[in-house]
Length: 178
Image 1 (tube, rainbow, N blue to C red):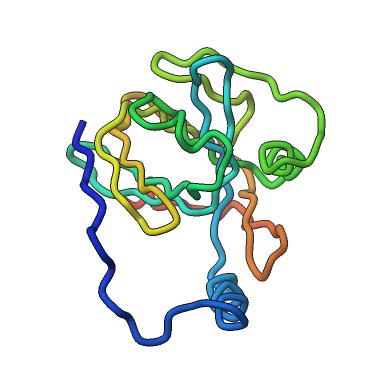
Image 2: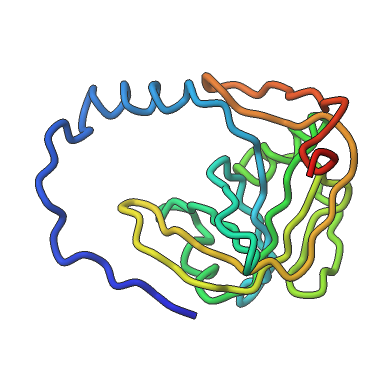
């Protein structure tokens, strides 16, 4: 696994986001609708899940995905170098997203994956072994090599403008076009 070295000092950037600009910057970013996922993994002493909306595919060969995890997240440091699963949530799984964002709720149902634990009934999952980690300012960018995956039909849970919403399942997905 490659770990990128942090920059010694960030270059000065015009329009840094601090104070009121940070709030406006976050609001501007919130206009971009995203899916909702939970990154799950086994930590040193317990199983963890982190709700994220920063997830993307990176490469088809090898199959790589990326998640961005805030350094302030309780489980951030334990994720380094560990296999993980990205669990894509269905529209009916808002309560699960909230649970792993720190709002108490029913205990999730876990599935023992081949590489890392995953959640039962999710819209899709990607089990990953660690590929690389990069400094991303107040986040760490974790790349994982996908070693197992699957999906089911259904509407997706999405997040935009600081609220959950639904992305309806299309009649014909990209996988049917290729």
